Length: 146
View 1 (cartoon, rainbow, N blue to C red):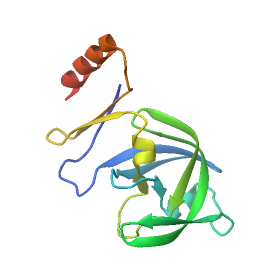
View 2 (view 1 turned 45 degrees about the horizontal axis):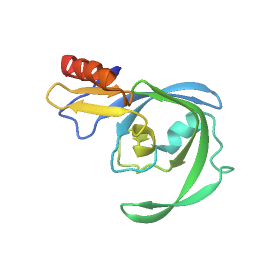
View 3 (view 1 turned 90 degrees about the horizontal axis):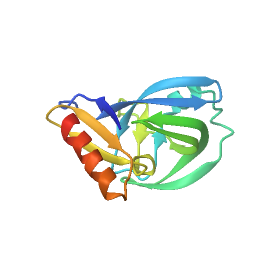
View 4 (view 1 turned 120 degrees about the horizontal axis):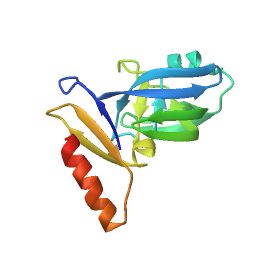
């Protein structure tokens, strides 16, 4: 079980994310986005991590605003909400008006169960479970944390 606090009055949920890139480790503040299929990184954050954006491949992606061209980068590791993923692909750019280093999209969020308490500002993640006894134990953790 992993949990983190967030500001329930903010316009989006910002969560700390550790990324291992080409030039080491960066802690970023990324927005949780259940409307995004992919995890997205800002160009500035990618540059800080050591990526040369002129040499990265481009892909076409569908956004809420239409079809756009995006850069594709490969991260060594991304860690957030108690989940570590090695060799992850991210796209960019991120809309400049968003004041975050990136978006945690559904490709990352689908790795665990996610529970959100907006009143207390708590995000809780738990592993998936098919065993009934384990489900009861997880339920007890959820109620205690929320």
